[in-house]
Length: 311
Length: 214
Image (tube, rainbow over all chains, first blue to last red; front, side, top):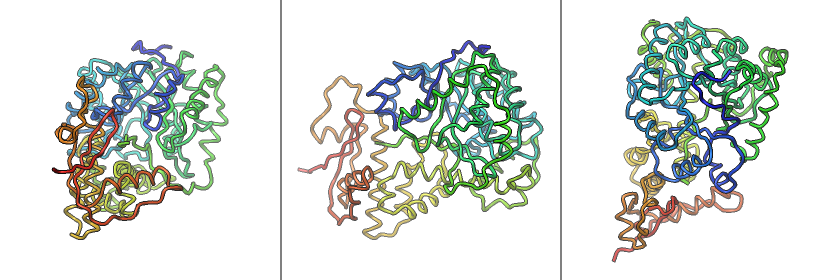
């Protein structure tokens, strides 16, 4: 089932990260599309923007933000939105996405994707703001389910119900992060298959895949390694949930970033999970119920920020 | 803590305080606000966000000030950066502004000793380097780029710094060391050597030049 927005299935893409700039400009590798972190290009007139301009001439690009703060109780930042819109005008992304989260209140910014209390009030609030943003950007917004590590006592709606209801009421698209569903399922005891099955397939515009760090008692969404088998199986299930049409699929890798060819090899694995075969439910169940015994020694933090340093 | 399900602002202000200034929020408040679904306790769950907040922003500061981090030693850099983030938390969506006031912060909190003055000068220099990297440059201009130092100094994206120490030399040596730590030794802290440096940009590459005043 193709998405209701008529947005194309771009194929298999990777996140554009600054350590790969030179490789891409020298080799123009065979990759279907790039996803860029919007904020890394909104306030620079230096090399990052120059590189993005050149890449956008040759490849489809999608803008993925981390600072929209759609769930914040503080007013929308129209200065931010103006810059976002200006960048979109410049690079003509196929779509613009961000996260179902909030990043700060009272004028502060934590630069984290903080969880919302999942209540009817919060749902009304988020839906109203998505409509405002879509009106301003003059395009549908695509929102991603983030990884979370806590749940509020005051929440009354399941995460997947909130996401589904939000997308239907605001008419926005969904970027379904399959790794985040796995991470949350491990951290909160959710059923990842129920999660995916509850999402309206015609609203899924894009999938995210990534690696994580299994710390035994919980999982941290670190984006620093290959995709684990259980997440691949969930991806298989998610792909079939779209009726076999699939959706643009993107591998995120933000820490311990490997050489570009390794990144490409990892995302290419996705092809073998689009075969229509049923997912290995036993493998998923084992992974959820028998996490590793001992946490690794390296403590990472979730979803590292990708900030382009001067070079 | 009482949490009103309808009061989103209240809950978000509370969570932000718990994440950014965790010493101001007690364990009972956390237990009252968060579900206890195991295997982690609510406090342990909150701890993931607390460590992430500090860890990722300090990491960003290290990315912007790698030479300063080398000169200070990582432990001291992390301490200064952490203290700075408490006193000057981010107020912008963009991380480009995160380290803007760090040199000024060091200048107001450091002692007036040669070592501290070198560190502060280095911080200002490294921030200027970053600003020139991201500034609106001359690359799209049809005019030939200026060669004369006095004209370069006048360019909007250039930064002129008057230094007590040979920061430019230390900066270059330190970056060489950081890119090949196995083969290039880290530079020693330099002796004073007053000079002026202009930091500018050509073809999207940041350059620097000593200014000789005639």
